[in-house]
Length: 112
Length: 113
Image 1 (tube, chains in turn cyan, brown):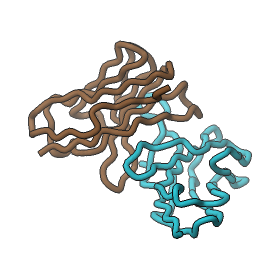
Image 2 (tube, rainbow over the protein chains, first blue to last red; image 1 turned 60 degrees about the vertical axis):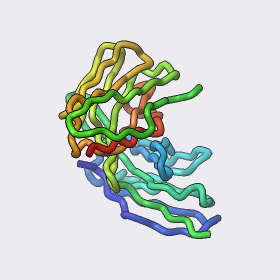
Image 3 (tube, chains in turn cyan, brown; image 1 turned 30 degrees about the vertical axis):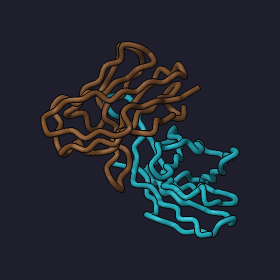
């Protein structure tokens, strides 16, 4: 089972910032927090990942709580092309190897 | 680079038929994965491979087989298709494990009737 909890859906207005929350209260000290997104009818796409410090890249920012039990993906200025399902993911052990365990994600709806 | 390429894009099978879903990557990644995604759900890992000649089961391996004879190719075989295997199948690859990002193909939509 997924080790993260996300809202089923969120709405935001175009050209406004979006904050997508994720809870991961059972995270271990060595677990990275991964974010992917899936546009309609496409495969998932890597967005960002982090361990302890906040991270920024050209797509988004990742803010990680000090106790690491929650994190927030920040899209600084959402466009219609950012409408997608966003997945917050941790790893778990499957057959002695660490693998990403996917939940149902948050469906982000962008209103023009 | 083409990245991860999956064929076919769509397929309809009758119960009991067999087929192979093809996946190839041109990024020289050691790690490759097969996932399935049912409507409104996240991805479930079927099989994965850490390098040519090495494969292992994921969360939902029953009804599937894989092989990895080259670094580039990782085909997924369905021997006796069942309606429960109706799903979208995604292949992915990564440079390493841990924090290495996964690169996904665009999927194969399979219907078994």
